[in-house]
Image 1 (cartoon, rainbow, N blue to C red):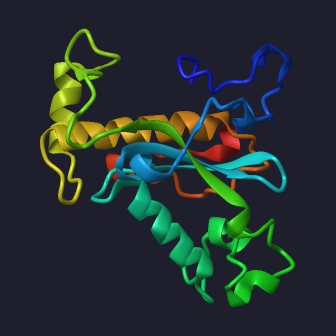
Image 2: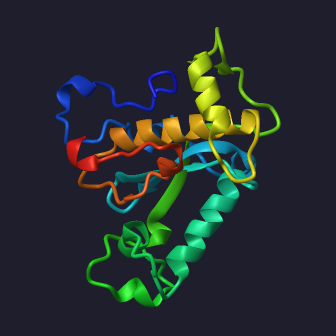
Length: 199
């Protein structure tokens, strides 16, 4: 976040309940569009109506950001929210029967997706390495990650998945607690549990 200038100018003036991320209008964030849609990594949702960041997520499957964002649109447009997701409850699409809910915080159409950290599945970044990279891992961590059961992923793909989860968690922690509408960070399959009541 620091390297990409995604943080506010001075976070020393902000208490723990506030969002640490800068406003996207300063051209410091790439919009998930065109070329970026095929990337993997961490993405963010920004509510243009309220001017707040409301969610972080990760995309590591086939189709990258584009496929994940399409799934979000389909779920927000659905007339049902069977798993009671707070994200789709808070931001239904205008085309959904749930659009008339008094408990909504906005419409899905008010959200813009931005890239937090993106990388190509064809050219893994040099940051994944045992030494000398930005994200280093020990022999013990290598063994643990290699043994994780990520459906359809093997070898370097597992490390990219873990990196996406790591970045998702980092951006999740940078959001304001009261504005964050994500109850499921997504990395439960790694054995990581995140309790937002203590953040």
